[in-house]
Length: 493
Image (cartoon, rainbow, N blue to C red; front, side, top):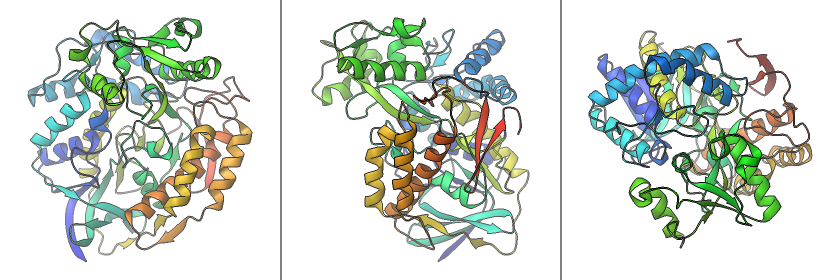
């Protein structure tokens, strides 16, 4: 076993992890940045939309209002306000890094004005991450985290499958930036590594998991799960049902620019009612120049968006819930921080506002790194927690069922049946396991917790829609501490 020591151990090399590493480097700290997949890694390179920044001080209140409206009563207003107030400083820093943001922002669904800044058309996430990686001095280690090291109630590092075998990394603090769990679903816009690893690691260490039932389904994915950016609808693309009728004005006054949960359910209903839904991209001027990735992905499936509308359907896209943290990424467990999609800061509430995710990853990633450096500790002894593992074949079978049970529209009977099947699959505590078994263990844990939270939330709110409870109840966060599920009022941190 190789043994290493660092000030800050960052697990995950998407926007939150890399930006956090840059913040720690700027302070002169020793950083170890880990990525289980080859760079550019994580969901960030897949993000076609840009970054939502308030356009001047006069837009702060409007951006906050749009975020609160999209979040359906579960946004922590103080957290959201502080992130948006800090946001312009990060836009200035990124421009100073030389990142080529387009000078004119665009408008996306749920936004009351144009405030989404793009890089390279629909390659914003990729160009953002590549630009940050170029600034980074710390080498990125290709490794997977097996488990966290603990000393008493403090997280003190991690056990990794690193180059050449097992690594024990002792760290003054650990920052989880491992992304979401989109691979829990059969159709998803997420990369293969999005298996909820960081949430499982934090849960094993005693951290809370909040609002897991709120999974955003992107309304417009191609049949293979490839994302058709929401910016396309912002630029004039129209949704049509199988009869060729435009239907969104019947569901919401904002039509194609309604929040994602509204559009996803409308697409779901029209597919059920008419047999299909299509996105007409032809109204967008200079389509190939503006959205080259979308056009290329469609053509790879034998579709030509310049000639005809393309078939689309909702796909699992973004987890609003995750490891419960404060506005600075602290989990409540000494030495353990989280930022990006793995974390639940309360910024997104029950439904993420388009392009707020990269903003949160930047702001909270930077904050979490600086806060972690204020509280470094190196206890003399630390031991690894057991890891979670499950049989990959059984979990793959459950994934095929998750789309119906945990998808856009949920029902008590299908949730109960899915939970029974998930609980019948063994979830084991192990010292070591293969990547496939570890990822299956993380997904199985989250399947059980998500199904339990979706059953317990007997209301419809944001991205969680219960057909048997179609109305909203009072706004509350769900919170798992271990297997125990409770509900907390908004504003109780």
